[in-house]
Length: 367
Ligand SMILES: [Ca+2]
Ligand SMILES: [Ca+2]
Ligand SMILES: [Ca+2]
Ligand SMILES: [Ca+2]
Image 1 (tube, rainbow, N blue to C red):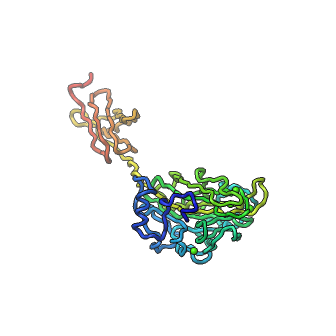
Image 2 (spheres, protein in one colour):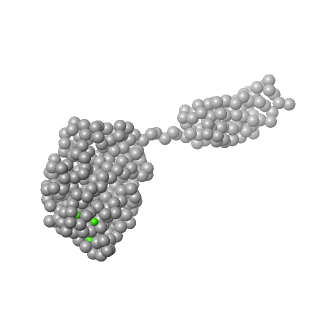
Image 3 (cartoon, rainbow, N blue to C red):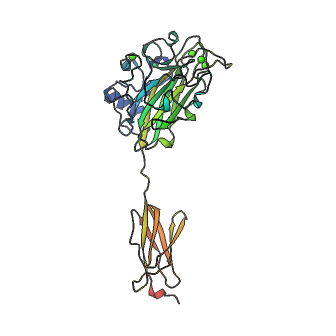
């Protein structure tokens, strides 16, 4: 991305091949709210396959095309040096032009299985308006640097990002969507953002990621900087797939037209540590008379601090038990019996509790 030619702040650009210290400095200073992960790995040194699910707990996945990353994609249809990202042609996903990509939820492969082959990218391209193959292309020289998506009667191209969100929440995606096509084509260039859990089944559209028309006919440069918090369904999921997709665009009247190139760049994901969910535990004990014999059929009630109340009865030997009690909270527990008086107890429940015992007070023996 050339900062001189876009409205994207140069300080927000994160490059894959920059040294670790430089990337960390950029992220610390600009890209992430302070509570989010600040650990960033230099993806240029990562040796895993491109469809590996990048671990968000040890990195803030970033992806982009810049002069520094021009060597990352060097041959057609080869994403092997681009960790956690793949491009696909979207062969035959829809038979007509102007279909809203928000409604295209499958992939070009049987059973929607991803990752799959063949992947798609036309490598080392320059001027988008001089290249009309459609699908996915890497524009790594010239004015507008980006991964480009261009639909046509066969192509409904998409980029897939593979994320491991184990232990992570508030997964946030930042990315730039831009008209990189300064040619005369004039299309209604829709782009959508989608996700799914696992590697099969339909994607789910994320409305916040939709752009109704990225492009302007006869010009390039229109830019949308997107920040989308992914649905909570991705939290703590080891296999999250996120994709950016466009379809074969129509002209303003809905008719057939050649598509403009849509540029995707400066993609980054951040996340925060997922707060552990309070476990549910059991709370139990025994209700006894003053001689230590169990009191059966006594009503034991547990009140939480929000006004909720549950009641169980003791068994013939005086034992009672509450299950599914949220831990980490205080409760008031009281016993009512026709024969005896029991002082109520306040308990802070941190873990399983088996000895919450009540002994009748003789002083208050009921007549
Ligand atoms: Ca290249
Ligand atoms: Ca344009
Ligand atoms: Ca347009
Ligand atoms: Ca078209």
